[in-house]
Amino acid sequence: TLRELGRLGEAEVSYNHAIAAKPDHAQAHYNLGNTLEELGKMEDSVSSFQKAFVHRTGIPSVGDNVLAPATTSIFFELTNKCNFHCTFCPSDDQKRSLGFMDLGLIKQLYQENADRKIANKVHLHLMGEPTLHPALTEILRFGASKNVETDLVTNISTLNEKNIPKVLNELYGTLTASHMTPTEETYHFRGKVGLSWNRYNSNLRMLVREYMKRLAKGNAIKNDITIRVMVTQNTASNVSIIATSNEASAILKEWNDFVAEVEEELKMSPFERKDHNTDDPVRGNNHASTSYLLQHGIKLTFWRAFTFANTRVSNEFDLKTTRKTSYCSHPFTDIGVLWNGDVTLCCLDHDGELKVGNVRDASMETVIQSEAAQKLRASMLGDYPLPSICQTCQERPVKRDQS
Image (cartoon, rainbow, N blue to C red; front, side):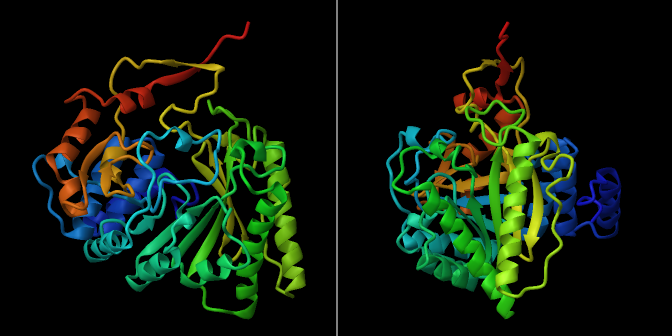
C-alpha cells in the first residue's frame, strides 16, 4: 500500500477519496487514522478512529462527539505477575495486588469484543507474563472460536518443547516474542531469573524451528510470529540495548543465518531476506518500529524503546515540565482491562491509576462511554487537570550537560 511504501501524503488523499465515495467505510477511516498518526496529526487521527469505531461497532457516541471512544487497541491482562524482573519495566514497582483474571471474565470479554467489534485484535498483555495463566490454552482456543485475533506477548520463558505446540495449535493471531535483550551481554537487564541465557535463547529458536516445520509440511497455519528486539539508540531509556546500527545489523544477520540453516535442514526453498549489510536497519531509530521478514509468517522487529510514562528514564536525563497540556491519544484509543476487572484507558498505566470503571459491574461499552472516561479524555484537551501519571508522562527528558 502507499502507506507501507512511506508515501503518506498520497495515502491520505487516497483514503479521503474512498471515504467520500462511501462515508461509512470503517476500514477506510481506520486506515486514514493510522496514516494521520504517522504524519503526526494526532487529533485528526483520533477523529478518524472515532468515525471508524462508530461505523465498525454501531455504538453511537454519548455526549460530546469530541470525547467519544476511538478504540484501536484492547488489552486483557491475564495476570500482572511476572517471572522476570526487567530493569526497563515497572512491573516490580506495582503497588496493586498480584492475581490472575478469572476464566469466566476472560470469556465474557472475548464474547463482547466478538459481538460488538470493539477492536480488531485483542492483546493478552498489559503487565505480567500471560503464559503463566493456568488456563492459557483454553483462553487461546476460546478466542479463536470467536474469530477474534489475539496478540500473545510473551517473554519466551515458558515456551518449552511441551508448550510451544500447544500455543501454536490454538493461537489465532500473532505470537510476539519479547526478545528485548537479544544478546548474552544484555540478558542481565532481565534481572535475577531462574533461566539461563542459553535456555532462553534455545526456547526462541525452538519456537521458530517448530513454526518452520509446520510451514515445510504445508500445514494450515492461523498465526504468525514477531520477534521483537528493543533499540535504545537516541532514546532516554535507562538501559543500553542495540545502541548502534552495527549492533542491529549483527542481530539481523544472526536471525537471517539461523532461519537459512533451518530452511536447509527442512529442505525448504530459500526465502528472500533483507541483507543485514543494509545502511541502517533501524533507520536512525526515528520510527516506532522497523520490521524484516525472515520467512513466511516470521518477522524480526526492531522496536524503539520507550520509558513507560517516564518511569524508566536514564539518570543521565532530567525531566523538564512542559508549559501546557500536550494532546495524548491513549485515553481515546486504548482499553486496558486489568486482571481484577478494573479498566484503564492507557496501555502504559502499569498500576491502574487511570481507572474509569470495572467490567464486573458493567460492559466494556458502558465503561468507555462513562462520565469518568469522558472526563479523562477531556483532560487531554485541557478541560480538566491532568492526572499525575499523565503529568509525569508529558514531561520532557533532557540530557544533562556533561561538561
